[in-house]
Image (cartoon, rainbow, N blue to C red; front, top):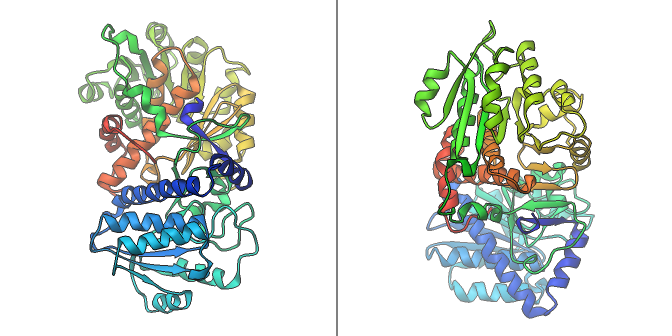
Amino acid sequence: MHRYAHPVFSCKDALAWERRQLIGGEPAEWAAMQRAGRAVAAGIERDAHEIGGLPASARLLVLVGKGHNGGDALLAARELLASRPQATATIVPVFGERAFRPLAFRAWQQLIAATPGRVELVNPRGLRERLAAAEEWDLCLDGILGLQFRLPLDADLANLLDTLNEHPAFGLRVAVDLPTGVGEESAPVAFRADFTYATGIVKEPALRPSSAPWVGRLRYADIGFFAASEPALVHEHVLTPSVLDPLRELRPARCDKRSYGHVLIVAGSRTMPGAALMAVLAALRSGAGLVTALVPETVLPAFAARAPEAMWLPAAETPDGGIALENLTLVRGPLARATSLVLGPGLGRERETQAFIQGLLALAECPVVLDADALQPSVIECLGSKPARPIVLTPHAGEFARLRGKPADTAAPIENAELLDFALERSVVTVLKGPVSRLSDGHRVCHSLFGGPVLARGGSGDLLAGLIAGRLAGGEGDTLLRVAQGLVWHGLAADRLARHQSATSAVATDLLAHLAPVLAEARNEP
């Protein structure tokens, strides 16, 4: 799993790790700065597609500090201008041009040399005047302060950040590494970014709930700091796109449908039928060899026509349209053949259906994904403290609070320690869905930085449950890795959907069309 996830560090530990990696002195630091600049520029190019992309005549506003963050920002600006001969940049050395440290000054000189006549230098006072005049820029890039930020934040800089945050005429707001004002101890005001690109290492302050209004969507710009080695005894990681590399490999020539597992999906009700269909459609795309679905008999004909690749079992219904307890007899045969089970999407909370869920769990010997209506305290209690097979729970924050016996609308953020304790206590793998989804087996927490607001719509969780079950169905192996594959694949497909179609007009099932391209593309980064 370590090759697919990189550590999250405190700012202090990140600085120490960087210094150990850059033992070659200034040449090594310059090479790393160039990689960071290219990675930030590539990320901006990619993510800007959600708003139509940066125009050919883009106007960039680049806020530059003294050191590495400023150098990264200047090199990113050089990359963006190089691909747009009509674009221009306004550079603001916030502490003055003379304050540039050697590598930042080198980056500044390279930018001027590479883009003659297209770069202007403006001091903070001049910037304030232009902001007051409502001048527009397509990109505002924050490279002022990075991981070495310490309180207090200078009053003039705090006022400038306030003005920048209130300015309505930026197409995209981006921070390099950490937004200015966010650090081990954060200031009351910080730069408000749409995207933050963590260069080299993801720093713990960027993942704090209190930092979310400033960080926006966090991306990891991997520049090779963990290519040769990783620290031991780190319990917090970020998942990388490389977790999907095994799915891109050639399949063996001698295989058949049974080689890749059999997913059984028990889902749906008369009032919430679509959840079952979405879980089935995702499982069919997951790489599983066979998919069987037990759904209410009244919806089966329409579903079978929509997804003929699956095998459909008609379930007797309760008077209110849920799956009746008597179906335990019907499901025994399919359950014996299944290599993973999805239980919960759209099932409803009728007492009889909940009794059916518990009865089915008592029979199941394969890995189980519990989602939606199966995420009830009574269901979790029936698992016991040490389930005999892998159990994966996929709650959002409200469902997790319910499992913990708290009000579902509790406003308190869920800390990593609480997630770890729950997963360890129950011996389950927990996928806590959210703007940054977290995955834990009780020993470590892995963050998925993929997906974003396009997933904030009904049905996206049903698709995730089907994908995860499909990955689990494929055989023996690291359960956490297989769950991580489903989570990252889902998130990367969502990112691709948002870039190609926009986050506003998409529906959840649009994500399915982006699963195959994510695997086919040679390189997929956050």
